[in-house]
Amino acid sequence: MTNENTLSLQTERAERAVIVCPVGRVDGSNVGALESAIQEQLAAGEKTLVFDFAGLSYISSAGLRVLLVTARRIQAEGGKTLFCGLAEHIAHVFEISGFTNLLTICQSRSEALAAL
Amino acid sequence: MTKSPVRLLVVDDEEDLELLIRQKFRRRIRKGEFDFVFAHNGQEALEKLAENPDIHLVLSDINMPVMDGLALLSNLENTNPDVQAVIVSAYGDMENIRTAMNRGAFDFVTKPINFDDLEITIEKTLNHIRALEAAQETRDRLVVLKRELDVAQQVQMSALPKDLPSSETHDVQALMIPAREVGGDFYDFFPLGDELIGLVIADVSGKGIPAALFTLMTRTLLKGTARDSPSPADCLSRVNDLLAEDNETCIFITLFYGVFDLRDGVFRYSNGGHNPPRLVRSDSQVEELPATQNLVLGIAPGHEYRNGEVRLAPGDALFLYTDGITEAQNSNDEEFGEERLDAKLASLGQVSTHEIVTTVVDAVRAFAGDAPQSDDITCVAMRFAAPLSAPTVGST
Image 1 (tube, each protein chain N blue to C red):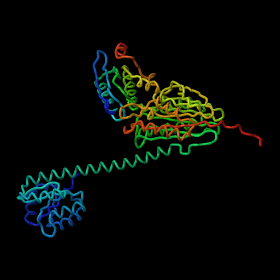
Image 2 (image 1 turned 120 degrees about the vertical axis):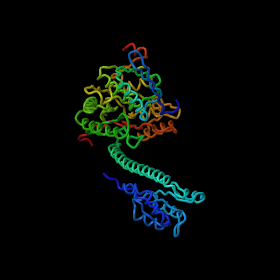
Image 3 (image 1 turned 90 degrees about the horizontal axis):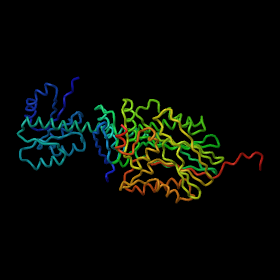
Image 4 (image 1 turned 180 degrees about the vertical axis):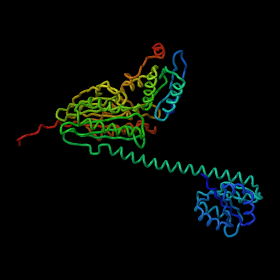
């Protein structure tokens, strides 16, 4: 990963959820792409999203805001949002900001899928 | 609404052309789409253009008396840069056509004129002119926005404390380098009576105008609340409730606020999701201020913030910073990180707070090298020099 603005978004369909895997960096320059990818799932009626952050190298506060808005919106519709695969430094950001208390974080994707 | 016709200037010393043009374009003239103005040489063309500033397209012959088409083109470049010219030239007169193109002509048609081709060429040129005008309009609008952004920057910068105090008890210095015109970081510093001082550092999610508005709002709310309560946690709880009202966009702010007691060196603070500040002891030991396990402000109304407390001895310093420091990246995508920050702080010794902030920021910039600055860089340093002496009553 040499280009700092690189973000690729992959989504996978699991049995009971859509798994969103952002690979690379999420920052102010590309947070719109993440937002649209999420919007697309929500517009399609998806109510259970699992964010697999195994490939995420960095997320800015603008990115965290989008995650928060998403989790809120899904919660309001009776759905679930789970996060897994956080690298140590990403988990640190979640911890400092207090997001660990607001969002549901699982160790691994299998743990997240089992929690549904 | 009827659109006014597009006015075009035709320059040719042959009188016949005027008749021919009026004849061939009669339908579009009648429909009010085109309106032709005629001139018979370059000189006359410039006069007509001066009389009709709404003309943006000139169709010109090359060989004419007084001033020929090529001379006209040279003049147009200087006097009417927004006028586009289409040259009419004899078939095969490539030399003149090349000269005309090099002098800025947009296109050319050949004689004898094929009027269908001419009409297409006119339409194409008009489209080009419209695109240029639209681009100019966008540019003008951007200039206005840029000016507003500059004003916003001034407003934001003027909201930062200017005179950072230095006295026998303590001194404070801050440094902020926004990544864009207006940033999402802020710091503040204010006395609360004679014995206490408030110290703030914060970072709002996102950047630009929305972030700047949110920082100004937070700063004002906190400053107002700080006068009412000596407890930082209490202030954060109140400010959080106010910010979280109707905050559907979930913009949030990480905010650290502490109150330093100049009498005994006790620093009480509450940390709303911000990077933990450092306490640099006089023997260069660097400590992270214990977390208060609290959330960023603005998204969870009713969240109860807690206080933490440390005690500074004379010579100890506090260092507050935003993630623009620790998350600054070099071209290998490595972050400056907390370890480098702590090592830098430990290496400083008893230097002035000015030197603390500049040395750290210089180190961050040297580390980042040519990599672009993606986040605001902000830090504040405060050193406790000596406790406030008790009011001396009646002593000599």
